[in-house]
Length: 246
Image (cartoon, rainbow, N blue to C red; front, side, top):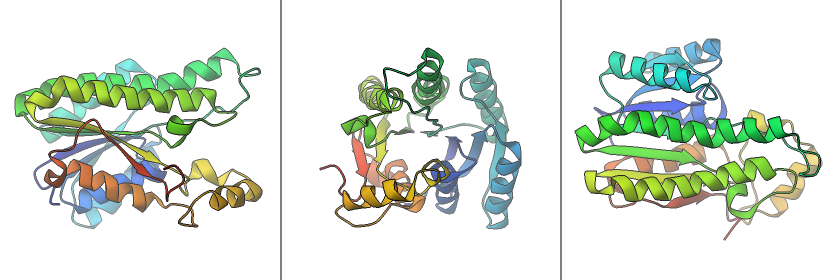
């Protein structure tokens, strides 16, 4: 699944799934532009990739800011030459029952998780069209497929990513650009570390494979979708959830 010669742009790359995906793309030979708010963690990631013989560059980015998205993608394109793999991974949660959910918590989650993906796609599409090759991969969630109490904003944003994925796939397929989504289930990350042990144990009981997923499980799926092995796959949602949702 060599990705040599390709340039990937990964949002939310400073930790968790995004960080692991960036490492895997670099391992497969892609040069990686890593973007997130935490510059220190990005620098550590770039150092880890380059120490292993890969190529990476960091770009500070708050995906809730449209101008920052435009500037970061332009800077990455100027520095690395192109972007032909886009990974929309950045995401936040602001959990609350819908009757108590504040409007800013709704807006922040939709802006960060969904609107940012649209804006990033809009910035990279022209270059992909010229190249007549591209991979757009949106990180959704099992809760965008099945819903989750207390996460109306998060579930809506992740379900929206699935609809966005299918629409973009139809728009750009004729130019050899694919657009797919990955819907992780319960994955060990900083976002899930804050959950109670009781909640985690209850979640595992709902997973037929009997374990919580690892970021590497998602990164493997992502590397496949970015590769030529997946050249005839577009508009799909690849569920990485241990059988949690069938």
